[in-house]
View (cartoon, rainbow, N blue to C red):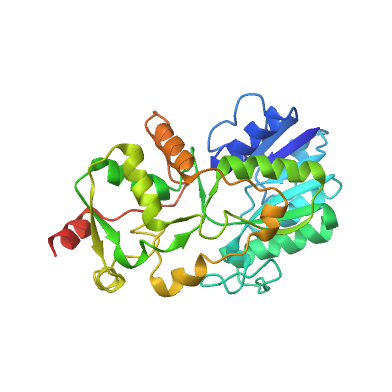
Length: 324
């Protein structure tokens, strides 16, 4: 079938293109043309989704039957897609847990939790707006995948990547003592990508919390896996939440994946029963970590999206913490 990937050159979109090609689809990608080419075999379409004329002009008579949307960041992008693509047989949309009004801190008991319905233009409310607009246009042919933490090769956001680099460098490594036993969940981009293609093929509808099962690993378990995969001699230096926050360490930004215990206890508690029922796979964490590390040792190193700084503990702050 003819499958259009909105996105397709970065992280998740690349894996969607690869999965769709492997399943025999005729694939096209629509991007602004600033983040490199898609995988070989995909038709390249160029256009800015915020321009109402761009998508019809880029298609130029090529009529997709299926859509996987990985790149919707604005309300106008969703509205223009709804106008141009309402007749497709299946549309799988990558939303976010941030579409929920009460996440973080959560917990998220199921897909019926309330989503944002404000006019405020921010990441979560914009995703929720896109869900409503596209669902109104496509009905039960529209699936919204509310994604959580996505990991794997080609990740430009450098969350797992920072830990791999820092742990591989060895020596004494600051870790959040109060969170090492905290259960966390993640989804490999390749698992999510293949599943999105299959959902579009089926014309599956409705919202899905598209992440790994709650408690699939812990933060400490993930860091230990990084140490094993990199062969590092790194030594953990556990510091409490109080010590980290007092020193100015920023949750999620300076120590990626770390949330202080008061938030973490509920933020990672997301019901993924429907995802499991619909067949979203969850490969072993070690495979995701090992494959990410293998990719990071190639010349194709992660680059931040335009205007976004990569996370990680600033060296001067790390030195102060270790000295303390």
